Image (cartoon, rainbow, N blue to C red; front, side, top):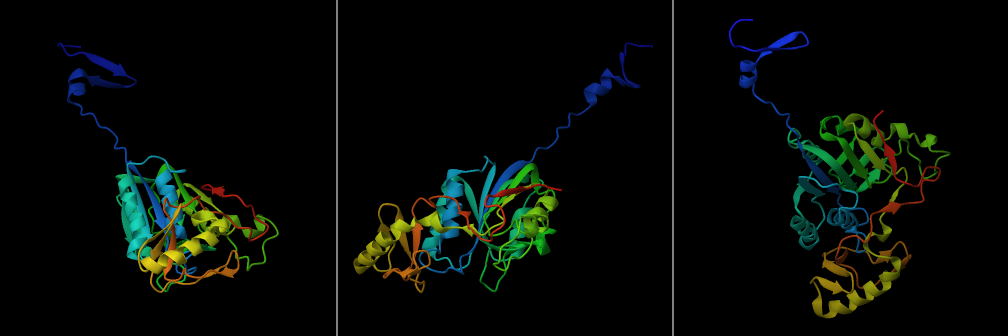
Length: 311
């Protein structure tokens, strides 16, 4: 071939050295990663002992990173319903750990949060702390305004929102069950129809692993051990004589956060009344002592958190 031009052959194509110099290098854009922790309102067990159970569990996960992988962006999205200023300040503390806070007021807000900037930030680890019924993660349970993740709005969540190794952890009751038990329990796991559960539908649509319970979720030990109840109530009752309406320290691990109008003094675990705890909410100063556990009901299904994969 004429001239000084050198040619090379690759398969059946030929490329000149001049073309190689002019060719621009194109790098594939690698999205960053985001973790989101969702926190529901607590309007069902709306009392001293339970008000902060979802917040405490979420703070446990967020502050310890237990099960969460490092991410470029971290978000805590909470339902802004029924929490006082002092109760929401416990979430504000997570900003020091690099979390952005997002207030939720509707199911559409949940979808918006999950779809946010997904070309630039793929979801990595997502966790839900809230009530749940079969087919729904109920972030605002026992209130007229629905803030849910369910089959009705699942299709509105981008199917490419997650990284290929993304994961969802649901600590809402019965996310892994596809059939209502009516408190009678099941004959077997198959009888509970896990293949029809919200967990499986989320896994299929979002192409991720979904970790969920088939049983109800137990938040009993997240804020306090039952053995601590007597001492907590006695200390609070005594401290209120001089500090009524203030945040009250309850050594060694707890605080009482003022919440006018909040009751009840009935503790369903010990099945007894405790005096002097009304108008306050119990908080564990370092967040939850543990993540939620699993309840014994409904019977007939596995007690462990199961993994649902795309089918």
